[in-house]
Length: 533
Ligand SMILES: Cc1ncc(C[n+]2csc(CCOP(=O)(O)OP(=O)(O)O)c2C)c(N)n1
Image (cartoon, rainbow, N blue to C red; front, side, top):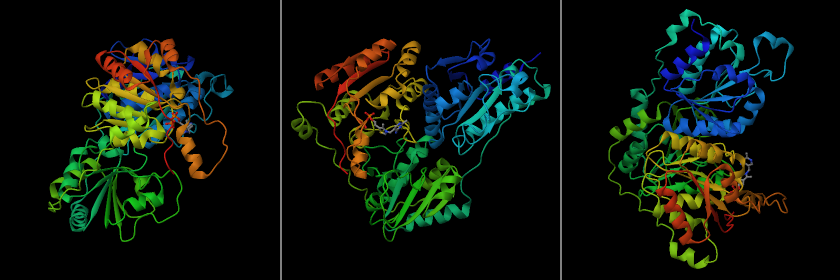
């Protein structure tokens, strides 16, 4: 007899899934029973860690990742992380255990009431199959749904007695089914786009995370060079879609309507690729675009295209469209914009000789870390400094929580490191943010995942201090996080850790961490430097 569980693992294999990230409970044990030896289970000690780890893995591989959560409580614990996965179009299959069908009517302990409603609106598809025999179909559908554009998380609730049920023999037909999406532009639309770009007097590109997600950074470079156009990163960037040392690179756009509009002043055509128009944060009144500017966006997500308050939009395969534009857009002969000067290191060191600044920390990291290092950032108040200082040259070099939900950085770094084993991952984490997913340290130690955690210890929720200034909200309580010993916490979870409070100690600690193949935490006391409003 073939069980639902047996066929499920075959389907997972066929989709390239051999890892399960999770935190189990009683409802999930029958799925995990006789866990196949070619699969690896990564135990996270909190569901937010499991989801964010899977998110990092799915983003870095571009393939679906499976998370196994415990009923309603486990799903609830994972939902903050699911918000980030939703915004980053991360292909996750969240598999939650349900109480047994035999008792479903009397709502026993650990029943997931209205299971399919719970994770909405953070998943694009949610189901609890009506019979055990529908489970393989639902697994297959979920994996395809997660991957099809716009990719994103999906949710499946499975009553635990289903796993040992016999499959419908016709379910064998699910094995090997290919489901794909076609998606470049039709010839007419492509002609229009080429014409608009080549006839613009002063075009600018704005690139979002989905350009990096679809491996199209090199095509974006070619388009920018042909147009001689500056390139901005869309606000609230979850990934880095353009080499930061390229002379066209201008940095991330501010996430306020007026500031963003001001930064794009003088351009007659704003071409956006792979980003919503726009993911604002702080509210500023003003026009969405500078006077005289038109906007055209190319996105994978129909919701993003439809809800944009301004400009035209095409929904399609961002990579295929950028590739076609790289080929079709004629060289304008315009000179490339001059590179922006890098901030001076010496000036900063002289001003802040008593304690390390974020700038000096990033300069040391940039100097010592090898080319191709991947950064996962969750140090909100110093994100703009990071973009100025770190060279992000390669595809897949940067990850940030796409919905701004803290607790992403540490576990996502583990998932990215598992996906990109030939590159080293450095997680740059604020001392506030570190606490949301601190148990990721245990998972790093247990599975030997060699992420380097750099804790930027400024003793405060720096970004909230900045936002309080923006809102003119004075005397707000609860904005400081003093007296946390991350070295002791890391050691408690089994991760080697040191404090580095000078440039030399940081250089030494980072070099040692890079030379070893084990996870390591470096706690760096830093100046609290709240960005100007
Ligand atoms: C789950 C969640 N809770 C709360 C917040 C609000 N929040 C945004 S930034 C921030 C402070 C982060 O502090 P820290 O990690 O020390 O970095 P810093 O801002 O000091 O660089 C908080 C609490 C959030 N974004 N996500």
